[in-house]
Each structure stands twice: as C-alpha cells, then as structure tokens.
Image (cartoon, rainbow, N blue to C red; front, side, top):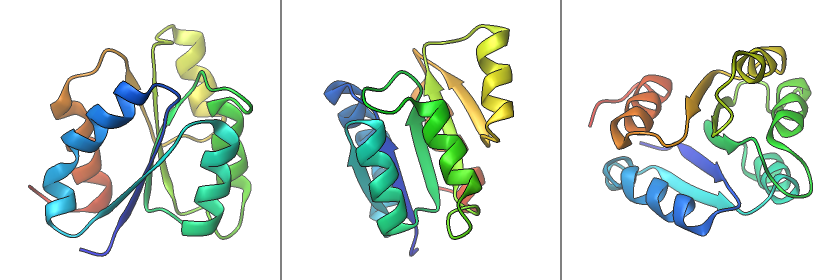
Length: 127
C-alpha cells in the first residue's frame, strides 16, 4: 500500500497513540507523518499530499477548521480526506466541520477502533 496519513495534533500523547493505532496500516506499507500545530500540518500537507489527515481542531498557530478549509480549497490537495478529531462535540462544532468540508468527525476521547475503521474506509483497505 502506497498511502500517506498525516496526524496533526498538539498533544504528544495523542500523536503517539494514533501512530500506535495505525500500526497495522504501517505494516501494510502506509506512511504515517505527524505535525504539532496547524501551520506545520498545512505545510506538511502541501509537501506530501496525504491521502488522509487526522486533524485536531484546537491547535496552536492555525486552528483545525481553518487548516481543513485551506486544504479543501487547494487544487492539488482537494482529494485529501480530512477527519477532524476533537473534544469539541457540540452540534455547532460538528456543523462547522461540515462547513469546512471535512470528511468526518471523531470526538475525543475516541476508541482505537474508530480511528482504524475511518482509516480503512478512506483508504479502501482492511486490516
């Protein structure tokens, strides 16, 4: 599998946990990259054109909603799937996710199977 997954989260423990959860996909050949803030995530997305992004909403520098909006409006990134992963679980927040054209919304704390299932669906694989 020649797919790239980008995790953008300012919490080191979340980045590490998600990378562990995605290990079965890494074993199949997926590349998992991480970024610590919205600016770094946006720059990495532009440079690597990931197939899938797990994007936190509450990020330093540039927030996740803004990052998602920029990615979805960028011609060479518009096919990237963006799953927002956040503690913001109110209807208003989920509506914002739709407005910025995210491809999914996972509320923290999440179950590992939610992450792997979303990745499988987006990438078209089964682990």
